[in-house]
Length: 555
Picture 1 (cartoon, rainbow, N blue to C red):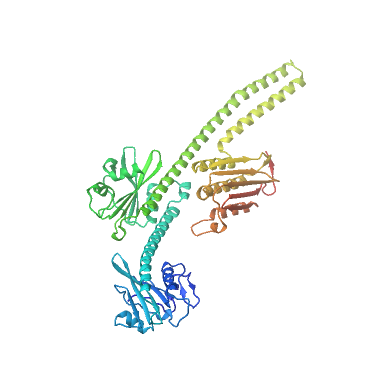
Picture 2: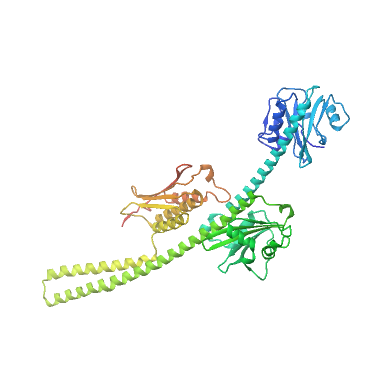
């Protein structure tokens, strides 16, 4: 029996789709259902009171009543008999078959039934029913047969669409949960960590990350998934022996290996990269720079998941592999920038020390000698006391100034200021994300306490992180002002913007950065505001007082 299972009109449909709607005669229909649209179309062109479409896979049937009310209630339809092999019209309940008995039991005097075929097999039934005899004829069967073929195509399309949604959700989990930029911005991930993240997100038996090294060999660097293969002994293989891997790297596209079918061409990759029970293998290239390339290798051992992979799924997996290359390229660029910054700071410290020695040794010693000579002349009486006192005071002031300059230059080696550090960080991050930075700062004699500067610098860094991770911007303007005893920082990017609903605090930690910035400034008696739109990007304004406990200072 093909079950409709409707205790009330289309209750099962309402249970399956919460967005159902109620028709004029009280029946509940599934909104935007392809089956409903087809049944409604054929029902409107006939004199039937009820139309239906039922599949033999247990899916709830669609029962649609006509607009004109009749005593033939869809709730009385109950269960359908097995679909006939041929189309049939039943009038006045004549006949001994299961459909004739079904009609007589429900008061149906006229009925047209057509089976639904897919690949030569009956997969469902579509029909029309009327409480009046002689209402349905052969031309109604022609319409049912046409709609039955359309129903198969619609169901195939829905299945493909559902598969695409599953793949999209799978890749979204991988990109957002496993391969986020957050980790690359904080701590450069290892190959093993990336493989585990991909394996946790992709519904595959295992995955591997292999790197193409300078010796033209392929080396496994990371394993992930439900049951990664255990490799012992040789860990590197010449790329020349792995033809399909070389093809994936050379042509920059994914290669699918049907390992369930024996093919001598697959044997080198099967022995080197896949487990003996792997049914399907996918080799996907990624590129992390001009001299760094690798492969994301996915193996599937389950026969139910080892069917031929569609081009759409391969394209989505290629996106995952390209994201791996992006993560590696980003983290490597940041590491280069951090190393270069440390080198620049060490070189600047050495230069400052050299200048401090020169100022002290040359200027200080020369002026000290002058001061000794002036004092000697004063003791010999070779100059007027007043003149010599003026010279002595000038020399003493010069020596003191030189020593202060040397002391200041030496103390600069303790590190650059918080705002300069934040600017250097912003330049590094935005340059790695191919985003330009415009930085402007007003001149001011007001001295800002280091506590305030450190908090402002943290707000700047967090805002730059958010721009790199979410804004997709290519230009950022940062302006620092000092209005009326306060410091104000304005950060404007030309990215995609966001709505307030998108920044609500989530269990995964989204929104914590903005919340932390607001709390950080509120502790200083300051303010933090965010304005964003899809067309004008995002503007962040952070403001705080330049005094702590009512104290201010001058440079």
